Length: 183
Image (cartoon, rainbow, N blue to C red; front, side, top):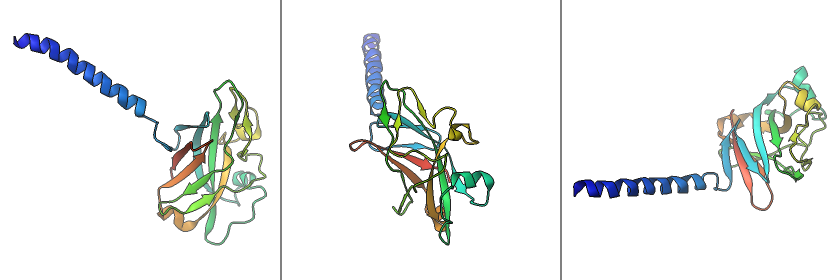
């Protein structure tokens, strides 16, 4: 009699565990906004956004000067911060890039990406053709040392004490993604 209960209980237990696993897997990524770490992919508006690198930029450095073309010197007690992105469109249609990016600190202070004249600049509001990427293959940004399109922010020096910093990527409707910046 004991072995009959075991024969019935084991398949029921396995079925219950598989059902719970299926519910857990289907719930992954369904929260809005989706939050990932720097270097991971977050899908927004059908596009796959990856922050491949982020760092403070020095206007006196030759490489960084190319990223900062057209920018005025930063305000006193502020620094420029670059977020380098790779965006991929693996769909069969043309999709639009986000029109803006923001960073928030732990206190909820919002910092907006700045307009840029650089050849490495992230093309806000641009389009990505089917099965293409930003930066476009063989472009200056894609061939550059970081191989990403840069979004530039001016951040006050004290922001590094208000971590974590979160990059917000708004998408169509209420869809969005969040990337925790490795500072």
